[in-house]
Image (cartoon, rainbow, N blue to C red; front, top):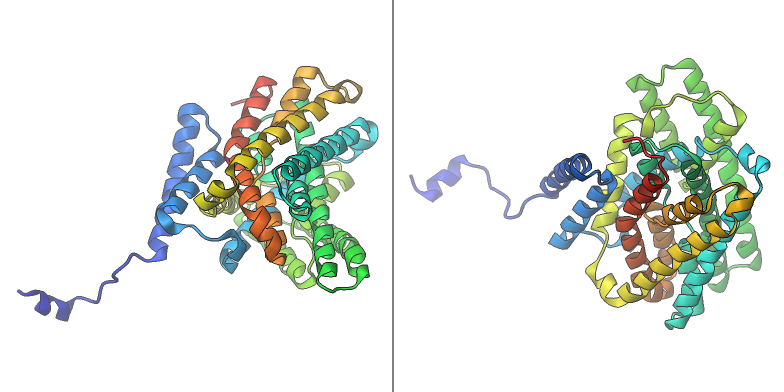
Length: 402
């Protein structure tokens, strides 16, 4: 039988594999690599997820972080909402009232991170606007990395609890700083001065009210449904998705609202909510996709342009956070060794910094040209090394239980 006769019976085959095929390979590789490395050498699973993303990005299957497809942006937003809600639900603001030195330490380490990042960037010739934008983003610690590593290694103790608290606080500082910069950029493009001042205030108030509403809705769900049931988890994820839709309509912050909802639930109701970790299996898949996607967004061209400055930023930022936590360790009730471990554990950056950077650089092409390669290179390094740093710090503090 000839090839021409075969074509009569067989459908036309595609000349290239479909994108679904590559996505399937990526998902399989992500799950297998994460489990293998965690079981064999106790490597955090999220590091494996990111490495698989890097591999697929290097094979030409990555994407430009400034032109995120809408479906990928939704996955990243929803995964971060799950993690930020979980982080908020483990942060008790009454602790700050009992020990105000915790807040002082948080403010000092964030300010130190901003100062050294800005100084290095200006010393290497970065313009003031780009240096400010990068330094604001790098104040934050990755909530995704922190909550995943703490949960995965069942960490508990003073360092773990302070790490959760401070990562929540400096995430808020970074989000508000970026919103202020966006307001200022709008003013420079011809917008009214009131926009530069009023926009951050509007975002804070609107996101807070939306977060409180989400907390009340989740509280009602927990009281009337069994949260261990798949239907209840589906309702909870739907509420987060609805929140993100309202955030988009109102131009609020999809990062602040779920974090505030978690904090309100923890602070308002003393009885802990027995929610499934990461909202169950669906949330776990979203989080794996988050690290896979951010890995696929890493570009070698970014490292070629801004890699050396990024390495200097990573080193200086880690040193600044470590020095700040050590400086106030005694009045805050922490030993020097624990304080140094806490500073190291505060070093990672990932999904939150990635989204904040994408929003800033999309709003300003000038910032994208100057700041993009440096900040994306720094985030990639911190996402790769950050989980290892958190694991090492918590293990050295004797707080891991795996």
